[in-house]
Length: 453
Image 1: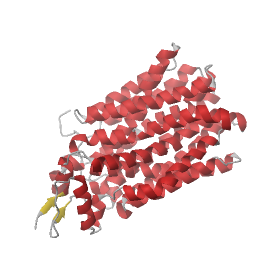
Image 2 (image 1 turned 180 degrees about the vertical axis):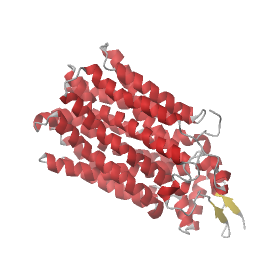
Image 3 (image 1 turned 60 degrees about the horizontal axis):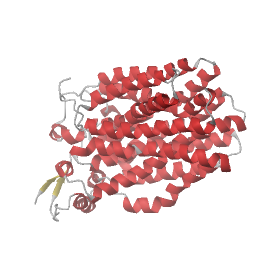
Image 4 (image 1 turned 180 degrees about the horizontal axis):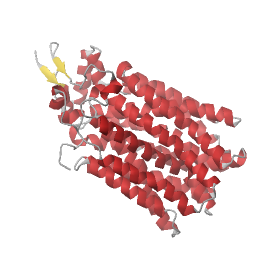
């Protein structure tokens, strides 16, 4: 009988076809997740005109999906630790794809808001599960990079929303951009067939043969035997998942993660919801104001992938702190009158260091917590952070209703970046680890925090 260390097998596996498969399908899911989320900022200027919404009403309407995302992250993150990631991902796809599609048929604000809330449940629930699945199967040397590449699909989806909005809205009206959201639901049977279940979940469920099949596909050199015994330490303590986030010296870091998520998501959704409208008010037409949203998400891809590459070579904490500081500076400079080319550069940098940094935060949290509480850790950080996302559109609406000068609007959006940088600087890795967690620390909580700061 051979004892198979699953962590070591995954850590040392060569990147291959199996990893490409997980990366492709997780990224595709996140692309449409991002599309469905950013879509509100795309249609906002037209909705305000067609339905006669004032800025406060528009900000509140934009928060409905974000309320849903908060509850979705808090519910579906921990749920997948019991039901498996694949089932929960499928449920979330049905929610966000179907109800975003139905949004296109909304005849009034109430119908629109209900559909956005239900879609938000799926949007918020799928994120922590896709991150956890990619993290679990990624080789150690590429873990942050692969999670960042996968999550940059969010920005690709945002670019799709802006790009299609520029074409579809003038031709067919705002409803048309919502109809595109049905594609993931159509693809769901293929996704269920192609996407692997979590190997950790399979082993906990006693489905060793299925887990062995996944490991063989992940590492073709591995040949399982009928009497093999698999070890996959998860850092489980017997505690409920939520209290475990505060156990063994993780309490301070958990709170700091929540603050960083709150501040980062506030910046992301304030910009995502109101950037086109602010630029529209500054004198840019609908098409050119949407192009700023396109550039924002384009920059996010470079921030996520570039940050992931840096994180796999440097201390991820320092990368995050630096990105937050740059975000605060670039956003504040958006309010300064500058040539259009300079504005585009600043918007791209803001996208790279807000949306891109949010993606790196997910990667950091996924690697910080041991597997037994990983989805719970990501789900709660994301869920608590969603209150910042909810306030983002409301903050923008309130600022516009106050008719403040443009620089003051952007300065208000920039302050959370400073707070997030301070929070991340206080994240620490406790020396108190369970023996099995310590043995597999490089996999279960590889954050670079063992290095002296």
